[in-house]
Image 1 (cartoon, rainbow, N blue to C red):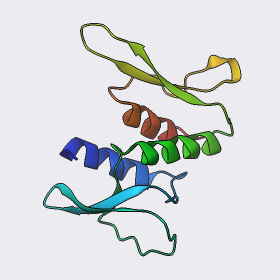
Image 2 (image 1 turned 30 degrees about the vertical axis):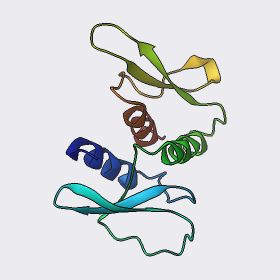
Image 3 (image 1 turned 120 degrees about the horizontal axis):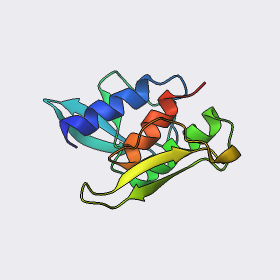
Length: 122
């Protein structure tokens, strides 16, 4: 993971609605890199401050989406791409109630949109 991805993962863990879930991939940050990844299974596993979720992992992203849906009390909340212009794809997080966006901006990755949506929990 890049430094930006690690910083994003730390933002996710700092959210009020965050919790570790079975199936998440995580690792320890050492020297600015994520090393020795493990798949979450036993939730009694000790997770120290250096452990972060691997937001490049599809299963971890799915768990993050579940946390966003739970936090916003909207079982159909979603994240989808909206712009494929010269700047590349951009992502938005949206609630199903009235099609309202959860954040005021678009994001450069699906993971970033999900973390921003979790941060925007009321």
